[in-house]
Structures are given as structure tokens and as C-alpha cells.
Length: 248
Image (cartoon, rainbow, N blue to C red):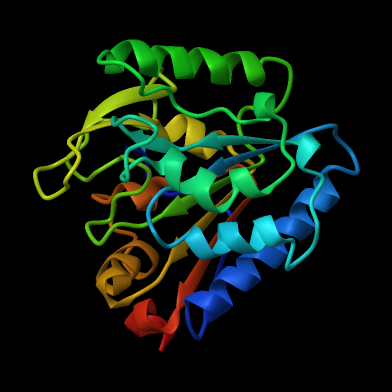
């Protein structure tokens, strides 16, 4: 992996998950509105896990501002290799609280395929989708939403994952360490995450505190999250429970 760059990084500290979710929603809505003044579409990569759920509910309700969903395209940074109806599916979770609640055209939703038993083929298929979509525009997403695991992983890139920053593949099959319930994953690689104009990390709860400290304060290069360096802006939205010591 390459060393972290000097991309502008802003840490937003909030009292709890509700406050950080509302702040992230306001910022994302404002960014979408601004970008769509000069381009036709906005590409947003969704994160899995439980932390983004409240953000998605707020976006669906338009609480922090209504969005032009027909001009927004939704992608995923990673997916567990389970059927899309499985409780652990990132796609299923996003559909429940966001996609099924908004007027977005079906063609604007681009889930990672996990219907069969051929993860390598599905990873290649998703890479082809991304390359076609971004063939005549920005390198990748306008914004990628990311979570942070207590082990410092993000998307499905784990400390044990052999995925280098100069990886020529955009999407890869990843085997999660045994501490994770679902072993087989499909993940965008670092070049795709770093090709995004902006990345937003959402982290909440005391279990994330040590990992946040290792990424933000120590810049621990053994953690994949440390190597997320988008083109223009990196934002961290944290609740009080996971503020690292330097930020107390």
C-alpha cells in the first residue's frame, strides 16, 4: 500500500449517532445539490453495516433536504457474497430503509451481483459495470460512503487482505478473516475508492475508538482505512463514544 497523501481531511465530532447522521445527511445533500448544478448525474457509493442506517433513513425522508433521485446513481463499495434477500446483504439493508422509499429509477441502482455461486465472475461483472459507467466522466464516484471496522477494515478490505493501492483490478473477491461471519466478499479496490472525488467515513460507538485512533492519530499503514485518500476531500463523522484520545 502507498503512504497516505495530503488530501484535505476534516473530522466532524458529534454527540451521538443521531447527530452525526443528521450532519452527514445535510453535508451530502448540499454536495449533491452543488455538483448537479454543473453535471447531469451524481454517483454515490453506499456503505454496509449498521452505522449508515440512520443516514439512509434521513435521506429517504428528505429530512435534511429533498433530492433529485432520478439524477442520482447508487452503487456499493462492497458486498457480502450472500443472496440479495439475505439479512446480511448490504443491498437488502439499503433497499429496506432507502431505495424502496424513494422515487429512484431502477436503472439508477447498481447492486453488486451475488445471485449465483461464481463470485469471481460476479466481481468481473461489477467491474465491467463501473468501467462502462465512468468511461466518459470522473474516475469513479462523486462520493463514497465508508464504515470502519474495529479491526481497521473498510469496505471489505481487511488488514490481512492482499490488495495493493496500485491494483489494476477495480473489483475483487476477498476472503474475510475468521472473526467475520460471512467469509466471501466482493469489494471495490483502493484505486476505485481513491478515485472518488470525496469519501465520507461514518463511525460510532466505543468499539471503533481504538481503530479511529490508529487511523487518524497514528496513521497506521497496516490498516486499509488509513489508505483511503480520495481526490478532493476526506470527511470523518464521529460520535463522542469513538473519539480518539487526541480529540477529547
